[in-house]
Length: 231
Image (cartoon, rainbow, N blue to C red; front, side, top):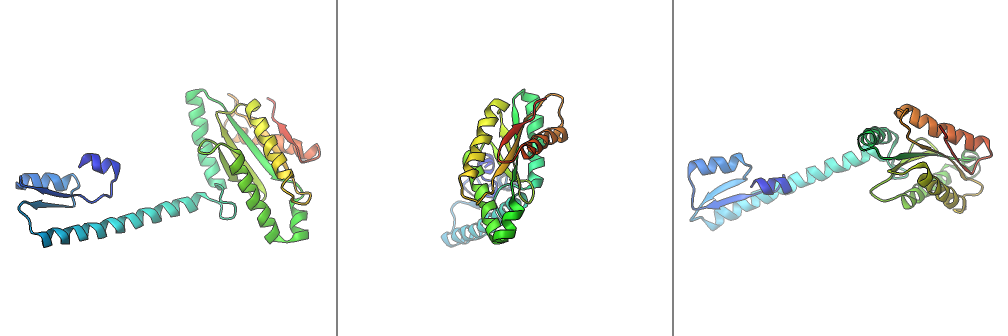
């Protein structure tokens, strides 16, 4: 019963035994049994209990799935299906803590669209939304699945956390993202990217600022380029 509960906490279990002492019944129910039946048993009675357990299981399963969906929606951007701004900082806090404990690397990309306001003005917000969705797809495709993570940081600004990646590893990834978006055919809408690797003197705020500073540099140098923060 304990092993079943570890594998699936909502699984219904009916104890069926010839050793039907009151002590055994109480022990089984305390461990999470749905019911306790003594042998010999009545088939109709058993089927009734099985039916009740199935109904209870599916009710709990639906509740569990609903809670998972609510959780997913709370951390996901509706338009791009990337993680949202709030989840970015929650993940970043956790990764910085892990980095300090394990002495690994962590790089951050801050990505901002170039000329996006002009694109919206010319082609409308519906077309602009298509661009944002496509950029979300490109980011998810070019980062490592189940390792790195991508976020919609703001209106037309994105971010990506590259776990275990040094600046030398992060720069080629950033360049591939920039190039893929340039080639996507967004009518003069490109991206500027700022890249930073976490340094011992950084906290979360200064780490984000360093990537933001690199992004600002990319904008100042003419847009559609990758710049890095050099301590």
